[in-house]
Amino acid sequence: MNYYSLSIIIGVYNPDIHLFERCINSILQQTYKNIEIILIDDGSTQEVADICDLYSEQDSRVRVVHQDNYGVNAKFEIGYSLVTGDYATVVDQDDYLDLEYYATLMKEANESSFDIVDAGYIHHDFRNRQISSKFIGNRVEYQGMEEILQNKNITWHQDDWCRIIKKRCLKQGNEFKLLDSVSFKEVRTFCHIPYAGYNYVETSGSTQNQGINNYN
Image (cartoon, rainbow, N blue to C red):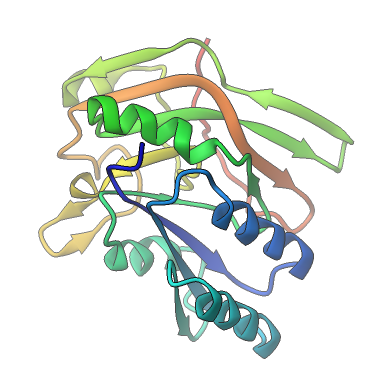
């Protein structure tokens, strides 16, 4: 079932090459094929830039933007302005996905056209040598912006890699806003599913994400 398209944004800044290639390959191999991958090369080394370009040459679904070092918000402020898909999401450069991950989330989008589909994730904490599923909870649905924004079960956070968001909900005027509750002026429907297929790899160099969803 490949109806709605999905844009996946990855901010790239001098990643561990092995982890980065695992990340990209896990997206390219998704069973849900109606995707585009936007790589925002934020001033990386030439080796990393060349790897990004190679992926773009090998698969037409990959787009690359090379730029000087813009900072941690590049994938939001620049990446979202380039989205052509019906839905959008982000992935951290050292994480990876189960192969059915986007098929599972997009199934909900295709069947019910939710503005946001949210899920749990798998936490790989190599500092403590632990792997655990996080924030799976129960299936919940919310209707209406007021109910969504006021619901204490939803904690908005900056890196929304464990949810897909309808493109129209990201845009205010000509600007694409950061992913927080104030930005979602057009959100009307929200669904959380009890599933974890995103593998969040936390190492000493990982992007630190705060305020992850809190369900049950």
